[in-house]
Structure formats: C-alpha cells, structure tokens
Length: 114
Image (cartoon, rainbow, N blue to C red; front, side, top):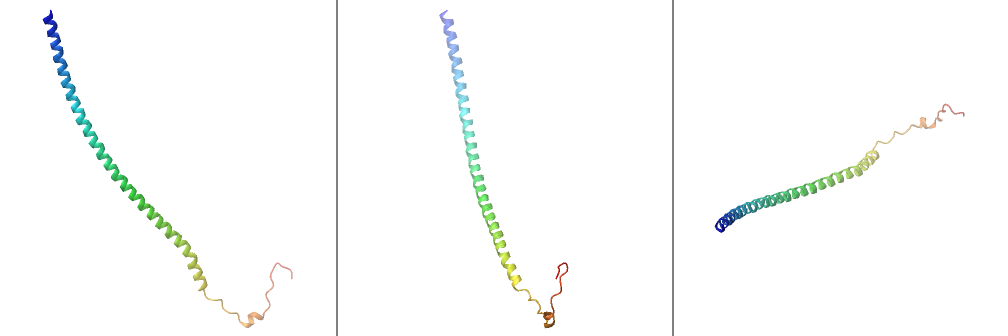
C-alpha cells in the first residue's frame, strides 16, 4: 500500500514538473510578446512625435500666411483712400463761366413763391 501511494505521489510530482515547464514556456512567450508590443508602441510614439512636429510646422506656416494676408488686406484698405484722394485732386478744373453768364440773374425756382 505504501508503494502504491509512493507511485501516485511520484506521478503527481512528474505532472507538476511538466506543468511548471509549460508555465515557464508560456511566460517566455508572454515576455517576447510584451517586448514586441513595447517596440510597436515605441515606434508608434516616434511616428506620432514626427506627425506632431509636422502639424506644428503647418500651424506655424498657416499663422504666418494668415498674418501676411491680414497685413496685405490692411495695407490695401489704408492705401485705397489715399489713391482716391490723389485721383480727385488731379481732376480737371471746372470751365470758367463767361462774363455774359455771370451777369444774368438766376432763374426763378418753381414751386416757391417770390
């Protein structure tokens, strides 16, 4: 009876050893898998950092272009009245009235009593 009990215990020990080896193998696979995932995450983070830098550069360029466009619009609006005043100041003078036209009394206006 003792020999039967020892045989069962030895068989249990062998099964436990096999289970331990399977656990070690699974753990090693998990470590390799985790390392691969960590590398993928690192690569993604580096890629994201590059994209963020590109976005920042694009934002800065948009800001510069917007500011340049705004400055051009402000300049065109402020220079437009100056151009108009120059145009009106160079207009031809009105023709002078002859002496006959000046001596005539103004024509009476309709609708008003005199």
